[in-house]
Amino acid sequence: TQLLEQSPQFLSIQEGENLTVYCNSSSVFSSLQWYRQEPGEGPVLLVTVVTGGEVKKLKRLTFQFGDARKDSSLHITAAQPGDTGLYLCAGAPADSGNTPLVFGKGTRLSVIA
Amino acid sequence: NAGVMQNPRHLVRRRGQEARLRCSPMKGHSHVYWYRQLPEEGLKFMVYLQKENIIDESGMPKERFSAEFPKEGPSILRIQQVVRGDSAAYFCASAGQGANSPLHFGNGTRLTVT
Image (cartoon, rainbow over all chains, first blue to last red; front, side, top):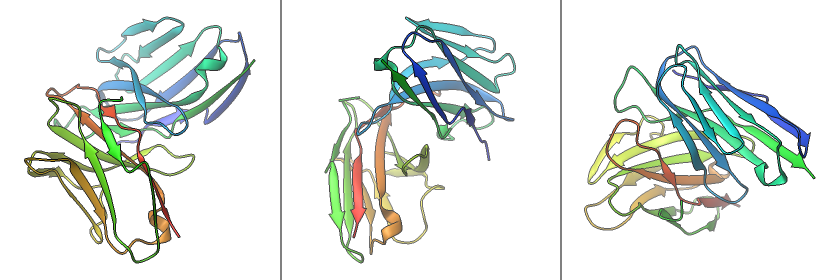
């Protein structure tokens, strides 16, 4: 069973601060996706990383895929209240083509104005 | 994610009743996934379907739960004889072809069993 561990589970910061959240596994993934979910809604895809060592930027968000494709991080610069939400990472296992995405439990971020 | 339509948004059932959850995938998507989410938890995979076929149902309880995705019409997740432990948010997602195709989620059905 492929498990994705996300840390921290909860994070509360002041507006303008920087933060990093992590997604780790002992398994190799062919790709990792990050989603953000707001209360009462479904998750929305932020980014997909495919290549080991890949870095992708989305405005103030920077996503990195580990060299060994077992872990990923999300760094937010100058957090804003609109960044508040549940951040989920999800991986496509490398050893099975049809295996559905495996989700971590998420990091619940609260940005206080 | 507005392209994936789920209904109803909220469903209340008494213990022992049946719950039917519907999902219409995004236009052009033929892959449908059902996930369950409990408060403070991530998404747990239940079942993966393509048109008229169940591809992977390894996450779905063997009893009381069933899913279908007919040639015409929405995908249906059916829970018979619901129990309080079935209370959760059920999310449907659809995807196009390709191993790395992202999932597009609906806004979920929140099932409450009283």
